[in-house]
Image 1: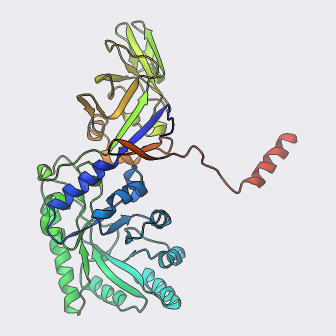
Image 2: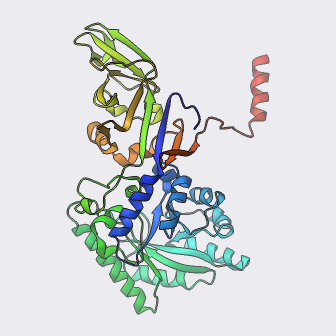
Image 3: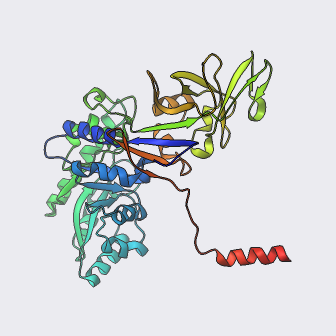
Length: 406
């Protein structure tokens, strides 16, 4: 492990494996898993997570062509489905790297088919169906079925799957999700009436996986649950799918001081000490993805005890109250997410305290925080951007130099 002296995210790949096994046990026998690793694996690192998942999944789902190419460029050969829209200018990449596209309009399908025919290939395609998200997809009616049939008839396309996405499966009331299942089934019947049977059917996200077994179909698409978080507190079958959080966020104390009663702390003086207070500075802020809405509300763990955040979280630092916590010195470990002894800070807790969204917190952990990957309590790899290099700006450098000379 590199010597990360400020902050790092510890990603436990054993917990990734535990979670996918827990999900798999809960599924209808014969249902495969398309693991969602978009947004760089929800901030955990798509490539290490995908590699850990490889023995347990049929393939992967991402949001963009760039995310798909990252997997391919790291030697991942299992099917990769892009859940979003791929621009026509990237169709060459789809075919070159055998990546599956989502299609739901003839404007998308025709040029992809034409390019595939020219290359003597078949482009892998899944159809998206809109049953309630109003985001992307075919209309769930006869017009949509006719369009689906026309797309399936194009010579350069191999239409391998059809999917929809639940909008409310994470709510206690499942009536909305069940209505989406009805619309999906009705659409499949419309296709059958036209002699079409699309091989792979999939609907369920993490919420559907946990609470709606009738929607397992051929594939499911768990996302947030892979990373050890439940979609919401309203999941009915949480005990049936135990999960372990995958990410911990660790930092250190950089400075300790004692301030007198009446002294203000941080921007705006929103905290004023009511007594003599021992303050520790932690070198993490909203520039690292730690939510600013935890200002004056959140806490960290030091020696297994809560240290409340004092005043506003800064871009790169924050201050916490360590009064009464013994032996706090420079380089003392600080836990922002995760366990310290018997105490724990969950991502869901931070979201509840700050009024945020737990998905957003992990996705927003910035590139400034290195990721350290652990299996069997051993560091097996890491990822940081500290050697990030920009290319192609040589002319700007010359312009800048000449402007200073003038």
